[in-house]
Image 1 (cartoon, rainbow, N blue to C red):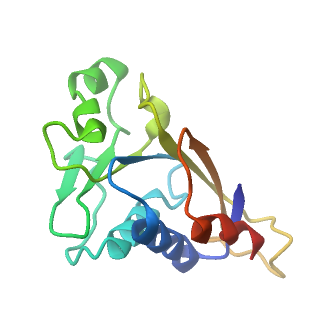
Image 2 (image 1 turned 45 degrees about the horizontal axis):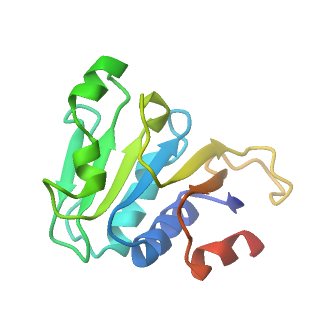
Length: 163
């Protein structure tokens, strides 16, 4: 499913809808180049989960946990890590909800993961400066390719590609 996002606000709004509709133990694998909107989408996700504190990229901290919300949000950024370092993080404890409260796991630079959970939602964000929807080039326009794997999406999400 492909969604056109005309600007950063539309990317954030997609995140809000995801935050309002996704269930505990959902893993979101975020892919895309630098500046494609991965953190912006997670900020919207936090808003949709009723997180009041600022959502910032965990590029240096690797994992940010937000527990005061409808569901916990575990925001990970694998940009600076090698595969061996990622394995050592035991990320499956987050998506299995064994050692932490079950919540939403959002992983930026997920293409670096050497393994995947049993079910997940891949969201590939790409800049879209040549869109047929724009009369002039908008540097914040992008597309979101949403691909569920062993996961059902809420009707509210499915209808986004129609609009």
